[in-house]
Length: 125
Image (cartoon, rainbow, N blue to C red):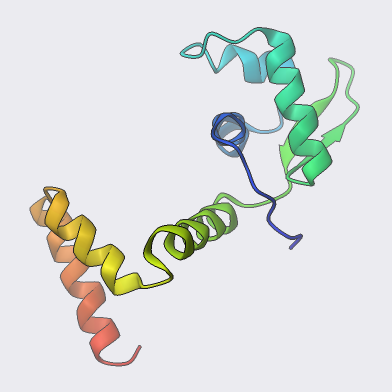
């Protein structure tokens, strides 16, 4: 797996479309970003940036270049999460968990999942 580059918020939007539907042309990606006030050329710019960063691959196709993610969503989320954890909480996972547990309302399902994870972690797994 290639190194995970820094991905901007706008590039995350483009990647999310590709992770869900690739391969797609620039026009097809643009069509799925209707909630953004972007022009097609803006989407093309983000696709070029992502390709230059090694996050996506472009292949020639009769309809135009088709773009496919080179990185998995999971790898990018893991990297972004670690960067956030290091930057905001000085790498302290416990502090992050306590902060969000205190500041956000959690559903019963989320609480049950969190309890199960903590139980597993407590067993050393």
